[in-house]
Each structure stands twice: as C-alpha cells, then as structure tokens.
Length: 334
Image (tube, rainbow, N blue to C red):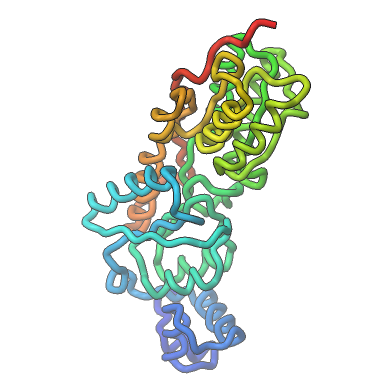
C-alpha cells in the first residue's frame, strides 16, 4: 500500500484498534490510554497517513506565547493579525504557561482546534510534537526560538548578534570602557546571541568585557531593577549598562533613580526591542530595534504558505537597527 493511500481503516487495522479510536487520537480527544495512543501514533508515522487537511482546517491562525502580558506580545500580535486578515483568517491566542516547550495538553487542544497554522513564540518543539502536527497537516513556525531549531523547523528571528554589536559600538564610540551587561535567560538563543555580539564588538575595540558585571535575567523589569541596583553599587561602578531587552533597561533606569544617579550623566543605559514604552521612559531610551511586528507577519505568512505547499526558507532573520535617544552620553569624567 502506498503511503498516500493509507486510510483510517488501514491505520486502525495496523494498530489493532477501532477506527473511532484512531479518530480520537488524530483529533487530540481524551478516552485513549497512553499505550494505545502511542501505538496509533506509530501506525500513523509508519503509513504516512494524512487526513484531508483542506476539509478540516479551521479559518484561523494560532499564536502561542508563554505568557501574553507585555507590550512585546502586542507588537507580535499586530504583525500576525496583519497576515491573518490578508488571508481572510482570524487570530487565536494561547499560552504554554511559563515554559519554553509546550506540554502535551496544549498539543491535544491544538489538534482539536485544527488551526490553519501555528506560530510559537520563544518555543522549542519535541520531535513527537512536530510529527503529530505534521501528520495532521498543521504547519507551524517558531518565532525567536528558545534554542537552536532543527533544520526541519521553520523559524523567524532577528539579527540578535548584530544587534549586540550595534549596542556595544555605540557605547564605545561615546567613550565608555567599563560596561555592565544584563542578558536575558541564558538558555535562550536570542539572549545569548545579543551578549555574544556585544562581547565581540568589545574585543574588536580592545575593550575588556567585565565578567564581574555580567548578569542573566528573565527579560523582566524586576530583573533590571534588582541587577541594576547590584551593578551600580559595585566598587568599580560601570559607566554604562546594556540590557537584553527594554523591560530590563527600564528596571535599570529605576535602579539608578533609587540610588540617586542621573541617566545619562552618571550612567548610560541601552535597551533592546524598541518597544513603544521606550519613547515614554525618562529619559527616552536608546535601544536596538528589532522589527517585532514584521517578524510576526513573516512567521504567519511562512506557516500559511506551507499549508499551500509553497517552499520558503527554513530560517528568516530580519535586520536590527540602533535607535539613539537620550539615555546615552559620554561617560562622566573621573
């Protein structure tokens, strides 16, 4: 039997279950034991069964976050929504609950919903999840993946390494030689790339990287506040701080204020993302802009094109740019 000729009945016979059980597994419904589910999934992989996706896909794209709670998410939502509207689709949001890897309960829900495509933000997908989505004809794209995605995982990101370089060069050109860094989570590829690019630019300029002034946060304002207070009270206080995102940079601004320091007179601060709040901070924040809305739009289009059989690049990286505002200046004179 050819792989394309496999039917629900063939799969049921191979797995020694009823067609209704196969249907439950395909659609992520409950009432099937883990052992039986695994046997059916194996039969689906072996025979390459693929349901008629065109008939079952629903007219929406699903956007998945760990948490939908910041202006960072809003920018991505705008971009995905733009792509969805252009294709006559709606947008559905879901959360994985503070975890980079979506759990099996989320996957079962997606199989039941059958979206036209899935965009996962900051996520990794285990092989079993990728296979289950592929077998149901549900295309997916990872946006700003937490780890290094496998070659078969389409992803969209920004030039994080170059963004780190741009931030460092700006501070070096201003004359800073003692710079602290607050990176995002150390297990996320984007945050490691930003710090790596920053370090590379310092090395190129012959400026030492302060290992004692490196901290790894969680992209939260609270981390910028806590680490900012700690770093700005070091005996050899840095003259500048590069934060791995704007929220942490805003925390550093608050830390400086609490310590009686003026930004940028006493310390310069650079963020990353160029969220709308970067315009409103006091002072307005110098930051590296990554085009979040465009990234969301590209990820959505990549997923939606995949459902039509269109071939697109497995990895898309959009350019970053430095936006200079009022939070950076030459270092204070000794």
